[in-house]
Length: 382
Ligand code: HEM
Image (cartoon, rainbow, N blue to C red; front, side):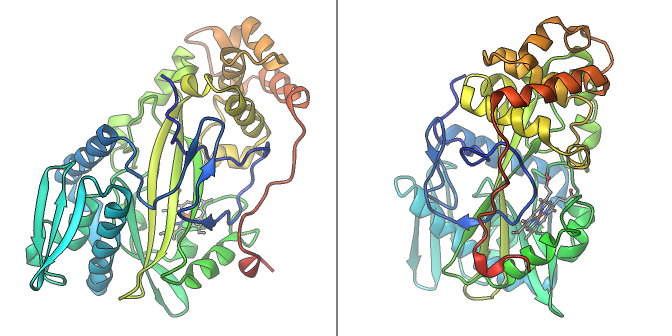
């Protein structure tokens, strides 16, 4: 396929190493990539088919597993606040097919893409299907995570999460911000958890921020739901892909996240929009391929382990170099290496010669630079 021009490539131009940071920047500003641009709206509805299929997937998942929508009682006002915020955002993004009007003490929401009209009264749970968070979650492709502040800390107290990437909403709900982020290597220890929490607490309703996050998916298809709850239905996929050495099917999982302070309740929303891009598609964009190879091969082992790519990153990046036509030792290595090319063999990344060859190839593609934090200086870690 040709990569759609609005895909949110998660790395800044020129970066060729990656470390965790509080990499936030202002929302609603266009970000330019090698193929186009993205980010004008908080909720982007660029492709009607993708939007409709994500909304349908969400309702199917919720039907099968109602635990994906949970709200602690005290979060009800924040849920209604979330409804109004996102309906207005959808109208901004797609005024041709979405509208919100008032009719007496009711609102009338029309969604032309989902062919729905919903008449509701603000604050009256009985007027919307599945309660306010279930209703707004059915209109946006984003996972919505809601937080409240108590005792000087943030707590994850409500959400509608059907597309989690290798974590469990049911398990994490009720945890503090620190508890959720404590397993991430080089995050809490380096002060990023504290800085990120301070940043969240300082948000105001008129200043919305965003960041991108990336990893490789645990499946070889663009399936969005790789939650731990659903693991029995996808857990076999990566071992099969690795055994077949079918590297082009590996999916880069890109998360576009927004940070929002709700105006009426003061609650916080953390939204995650997930986009999948296969290595085969990335190979059609040499600038992206070169950057991804640099970043993935340089990534420290503990971060690669957390992101689950230790077993295959070397041969997968060697394959990408060759498929993208990048003339490098990594590509040459792939064309001759038995470990990388032979289906059914053990993953080649664990073969020291493969990893060493591919790492060495970095020096011929570009020079590493320090990771860049886009965090406003005021929130920087002391
Ligand atoms: C500026 C704010 C934030 C930053 C910089 C941040 C950063 C991170 C990072 C680096 C990861 C690891 C992801 C990976 O390597 O694939 C992560 C995971 C996660 N974050 Fe955040 N985060 C932020 C805000 C939030 C908020 C507000 C929530 C809401 C509850 C949240 C919930 C999660 C969850 C559930 C995970 C998955 C944890 C797991 O693997 O078990 N984050 N975050």
